[in-house]
Image (cartoon, rainbow, N blue to C red; front, side, top):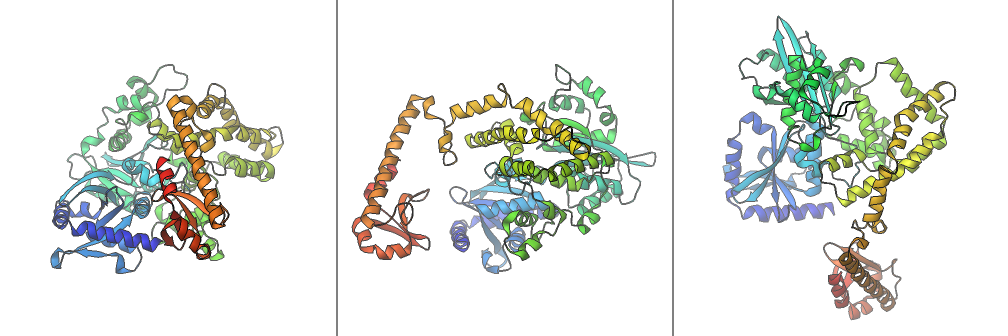
Length: 616
């Protein structure tokens, strides 16, 4: 099936491009208009087909995509044009396009991506993204029905500023995590030639892109040598450096911008004011390097322009001293996280979570500490494990607190089983769904998935409540930690005026009896909806009766040897196996019309079935 899909996509690509002789000249003009360094770091995809059915990549980018993602065979490369005008091209279906995007933007951090739409020699860039700025491709990267087996999330965007004053090199580092709504900033003196402290900070953030000051800006406050050192650090950490003008790092408007973004301070009845921001976050704002880095990171991700993030962020000091210092070489040597390239980290995660069945594949999956430890049930847990591995604790009391919880749950198998199998199995990605709500683009399916999360909370509270906080030693301490961190906050949220009210709304407004086959408003909400539902129920009864009739005519059992199916391509139809088709061929040809025969069976219908399918 994969080969058939690839052949169909390739054929469509040939027919699409053969009719557009102006495309080659347009592409070469596009590449020549970019600087060589910028062109090398950009992957350009071209949307083809009437509804974006597939995508093409051309030139050097096509050779890269072919070598990295399409295997060693050269059959997938097509050349359009002749002689010097020949242009290497490869095609990707929608699934492969999404896989390539995830690897390029989330794992490797080597390229920016541009998507073009158009025809002939008239094309326009409609979407662009970089490893630190992923909003344009959120659906392609993370759209998986509310859950994500890999647990991947958009990495934070990083900014680094170096100030030299009085022979002292001060490095400002800031990050904007638009996914978790967290701002981090700090400044420190780094006297080493290779900027070791900066490398540790970059590794702890897990960023894939870093905004840096453009070296041709006069009066930048850092030498060209420092700029080269910063870029060397970023490349060692597999982070894409993105030069920006000096104006992007202007921190004069930072208090006003933070007043818009920060959540209401504890104990305050009103929101932030610039004066209150300057008072509460003096350590960041009074450090020129930290403030400039934070301003640059916020400017790059357009945090202030995104109104869904207003009054939702938290500003923290980036505390590099609270975690073990691990540079890029140590992280690679210890195989802390799956390495991008060859066998991708996504594949390793899939096998670590049950994708591989053989012993050899399981052994191959455990090629990193993450893959070895990754037995989380939820995407949120997978992301937390990644964070913990990038930021190993050095504080003894915090380490002991985690160990207390582990010891407690290890000695409470019934509670652990309830949490893993009853509460967390199949739990949707609540963090991602919450972000969609904030952006006001959540669907009915998203609301139902959040309903599923909310409905699991009482069982979670009951399970944690069975733990004895008065027990001696580690068990008591672990139970108290779980109660304070989870049980008590969830009890405060799952009340009649909060989450239970949300659950009641979903139960009244959405027809849960048809979920997950269909997500629709409950027909009792509107008379017209009720009438349409009654009409559709009548059509479904007709379809079911036709299935019973067909089973009787052919002498087959409905639901087993005879299937009544519905697809987007063929609508409602019957399907039987090829073996059964040989047995009932005479009866079949006398009463029905066969329209498709493949390995998965023989598909057929009748005029009566087609009419009912149209009515449906």
